[in-house]
Length: 441
Image 1 (spheres, rainbow, N blue to C red):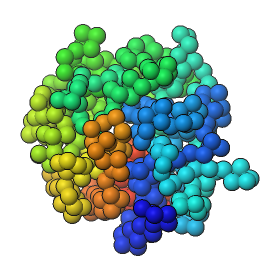
Image 2 (image 1 turned 180 degrees about the horizontal axis):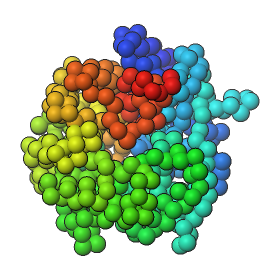
Image 3 (image 1 turned 180 degrees about the vertical axis):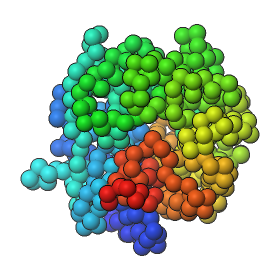
């Protein structure tokens, strides 16, 4: 695309889809295509005033660390907040995905004030997250809180990736859009600390520090997650492995945070163990709805569990957690990924909406992450541009409409809904939902 045409495309979509907040149009474009950072906008890592990007599970970058230039040495901020500018944007929290060749750039003006620039024009002010007090303290063994228990979503969510790799390994098993294993390797290669299996005592110690210094109680939830476990880790199967962290956290900090687990769709007895350990929300991610695409893009999940069984287990888990508290994620955009994806936005939206209707008709509200085509993954290599922005905008429209059709409201554990209120940073689904009557706009 020539210069200036990205602005024209974005404005055209805002005009065509007036019910989708304009904030969400920019947010989706930044999430799907990434953003470049001027050196003036990078953080001073853990020694500075800005909370740096923690690489909490995937790289979420459009380049490998060696390709990011200075952004590999001085990390960009974890997230940015967009406000104001010519589009009068309401406060919008966006997860940072670095792309040195993006038409979007964050830079400071001559007064040192950060802004977001598109095609060379300043389109909004940019806020960066302040370094939280708890990041300034280390564990007894010298590890940083950011490495053991980073927080995202403007401090709302503690993200506990307790197993940094996935046992679906290699081309025949790895999900084709996922770089969890490569991200682990690149951090090791760069000499960055990146603990493979997090010790439960370390996790508790990091949470102790967060609890002590987060006096405003900004952190409201934690997510336990990591790679799929097909055999065992430290002698435990998947339900026991992730469950034993939840049990320890809930015993040490009863009710302090909303506990969430992202795991595979597990059999009923395993899911019951999560519940017994005090987990409140279960995320058995179904990744992509279409039957053929699930087989092609999630070969390990297809082989070990299978799509139909995966969906059956999601519905079964609603009996244990309650439908409201089962929130499976899908990766929005891989529906359109070459070589097997849909060729038109219409077909992709129709397929994804069919999946939304399937789950929402059972009272289960999926959520989604906007696909970031990471370059070390097969789908990232084949689709460096990701899915078209129009797909993402129409998905937001279809998602909200389907929720309304089934009388559902925004899922628990995500903070407030509504443009200007939402903190969920890896897609705009919360920004696009109606603000609660109780939430100040």
